[in-house]
Image 1 (cartoon, rainbow, N blue to C red):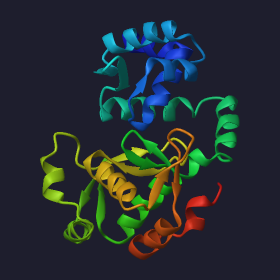
Image 2 (tube, rainbow, N blue to C red; image 1 turned 180 degrees about the vertical axis):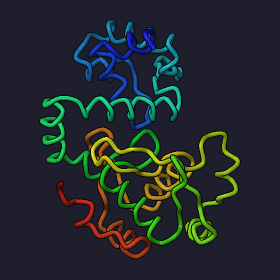
Image 3 (spheres, helix red, strand yellow; image 1 turned 30 degrees about the horizontal axis):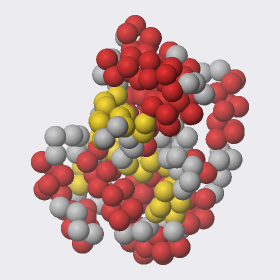
Image 4 (cartoon, rainbow, N blue to C red; image 1 turned 60 degrees about the vertical axis):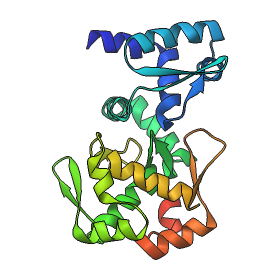
Length: 231
């Protein structure tokens, strides 16, 4: 714990890790800009995170790209942020600010959809009887399997994945659960490929397209106002 605490205790490294929460691979130069440090300093921080197993590195030509080591690492860091954000008056001020930003409405949490949209999707699937909640996980019902198959998602393939099948991920802005794991990743991939959602210019932020507004309403009964509504 002291080793991990030392790795994430640096403000610059915390900013770097947060920037990687959306699952994309970024260069040291890009991450240096986010952390407001020089590229050389960013490389030093990334070296420590790499040695500590929190990030991985992939080389392509002259460039090296960094990403979080796994969805499990992303989930652990996100949940740590949720728990620590509950402490102190400063957290209340931060939450108040977050309710006025697009990142609360819809964002990527590593490879799955989070924010109000992610929570709305989880609620809709539960209401339709496609998912049932089991302790800290979700399970697909027979109705859910048929729904996923109608979208071109093969539940059997998801179950064969090495990662958690479907997990209840506590959303740090909504304080309620969205769907992570193989099922959450498949839903995000589906929504992006079908054009229901698109990535905004701001990193991690998602926007629901006009086509997506209609499809979410048709398939899940989710209204655009439901996603955009501020707490």
